[in-house]
Length: 570
Image (cartoon, rainbow, N blue to C red; front, side):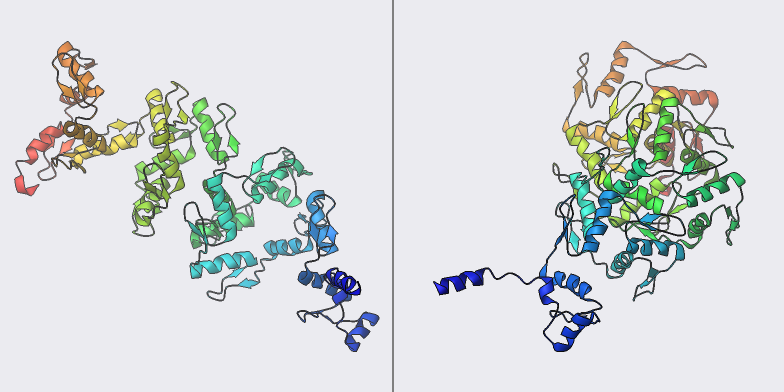
């Protein structure tokens, strides 16, 4: 019986609590507990602490004891201070205020870190290149640019990332998970940062009003910066190009255009940006977030600028005019791109081969030829792509999805640029002009095919008979003559043709229908190409030039025949 009681007593022996571990039994340390004077040493790891209370709190890191519970969400903490700080998440209390910009924080540590944005203090230094950082996290991420280490791998697409945070962020692009929910309106977000920014639309009181235009600001610093826009005072001057700015922060950002500095790095793809705003916009390409919605057709956009441009497709407004040829554009970017056709400027340069481009989109497309890495594979046909957006577009071929609808005739398209090209058939706009013969086109790819008529280039070759074609479409149509695929038969003479469009043109030889009429002499033609060639007999235009002897021809066929007279010189 006594043994049983002893065993029972042994089973009930509790795990030692923090207060049981405060002293080690040494007389001198016992005296310190009586006098209240430190240092107090941890009996487990020998760490020394200044008071009995801090020792008790520290010991809980060994015992795992968390005696302080949150009354709202029941999360537990090892110290009363940690619990109090946590409660501010629920109450929204921010007792620590920045004395420079009046921004408030939940903890003194957050306040200390924030102060570095004002003082410029960068206490964390890279031991490899001596670059300094204001935050330890930024230093850690930077060090990986030296080591190239990417230890975190996505188990869906095998993409490797440098931090666990980046991996979590990336995985959400596959799952479309949005774990951060606004308690006020239930809107969900993929990233805590986006939720915090959104919460300001509910909570941020704007008490600082501009006396000129009544615009309100949450912080006095914001108001002071805004006031400069009324005075037009620009006291901050660039020492390189003398451009002036109203705010020092704008000058600082501008200077990066001279230095090439891009301090804001994407944690997912390591692309760098000159401003935090540019990084924020770029991140939406990974998250797919489109917070700006058109109130006419409910289409969503990643940026406010894209929404503004889209709204003009409803209004038809074209406020941006070229001062050389008076052509008007709906967007300032389109005007800038157009102006380069006059100046020949190509400001976007490939860092690998130094090739230059007039548009940033053209540069991006070109850069894929260097990367070559194709991580994103189609589960239907196993075709691989360099970007998830390209894979998403490709999948529509299999699903038949056509999400882009014309608001005029309701025709649907797989890709937005196909819709843009189609819309020009309604507006009559032909922005792409041939520099040789000035013929205009609604779609850029049609211009590229047309230019080959001047150059004689035929990059698409039939693998069966080696015949060459100017366009991939021409090659596809030709291949049907070998395969018999999708052939259609004339019901009058039984001639077989590769596609319905060819049959429609062929039928005109039987019906003698000639729908294309010359406006100068009223002569009629079966096909539009014949009419175009005929018009050159009126204008005297000869756009096809021999590269050997400079002789000019009205039609490309005549040029081809002529080139044979040069034989080996061609």
